Length: 236
Ligand SMILES: NC(=O)C1=CN([C@@H]2O[C@H](COP(=O)(O)OP(=O)(O)OC[C@H]3O[C@@H](n4cnc5c(N)ncnc54)[C@H](OP(=O)(O)O)[C@@H]3O)[C@@H](O)[C@H]2O)C=CC1
Ligand SMILES: O=C(O)C1=N[C@H](C(=O)O)C[C@H](O)C1
Image 1 (cartoon, rainbow, N blue to C red):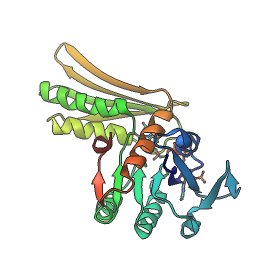
Image 2 (image 1 turned 120 degrees about the horizontal axis):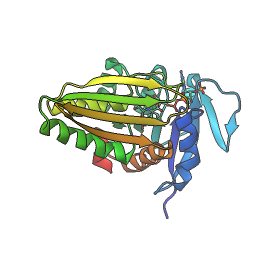
Image 3 (image 1 turned 60 degrees about the horizontal axis):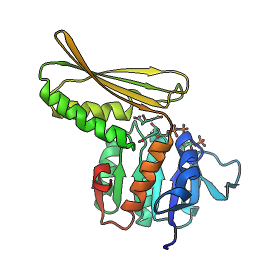
Image 4 (image 1 turned 90 degrees about the vertical axis):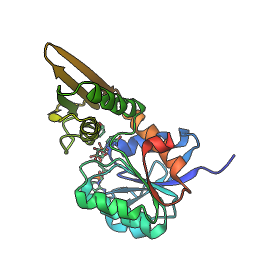
């Protein structure tokens, strides 16, 4: 059996970072977190994983893949670190600016990168269904409604925007509505409305394990690849 894949978890203290740290040993193949990065470090080692602040990135140990679920303000740092180390980057951080997306595309000439607004299998399928429905229902209204927990900062969600891109590819003109309430993990409904009838396509996330497992799966398959901008479907 080969050694576990060394990963750096960027955003380690967050909801997703904690989930990744809990599940990384169970991934197939297993991953081993060699460092966790967060805004501020209060405890040097948490659960056996050395912790670093965003100002201490240079001191992090060697890793093959960084998995980033943080905030846009922190994204440039992890991208620069991966470029410097020649490591792969898997990112699920939403709300990135156009400049950050361009920087990611440029980085893909030198390292393997994968950014996805949603790492669940169900949403990957939903995106395909939206494209099919949009193409089959020309002229119908298309509305994307997303709900998330009250701590989420970006709106519309990254997933809603990706679903909107799928609808647009199919010729629809999507509109967006967002709700922030309680501890909702993430729900996305895409509604096509015609005269006298309505089609609803809905995905409800029941926990964050689905995102973390998808990101770990992608990390293990991205490590060691040629530089490039990979999509989740390339690695599933
Ligand atoms: N693509 C997908 O499938 C999914 C994407 N997401 C996205 O992932 C991101 C994180 O979500 P979530 O875990 O809920 O967020 P949290 O707010 O729970 O966690 C954010 C993490 O980022 C860290 N952070 C914040 N600012 C900085 C900084 N300047 N430098 C370094 N680290 C920083 C925080 O550290 P500290 O605690 O020290 O502040 C924390 O570890 C969001 O963009 C969300 O939309 C979420 C779920 C699934
Ligand atoms: O912030 C979250 O929680 C989530 N963010 C992603 C998004 O913006 O689409 C994915 C998921 O819905 C959870």
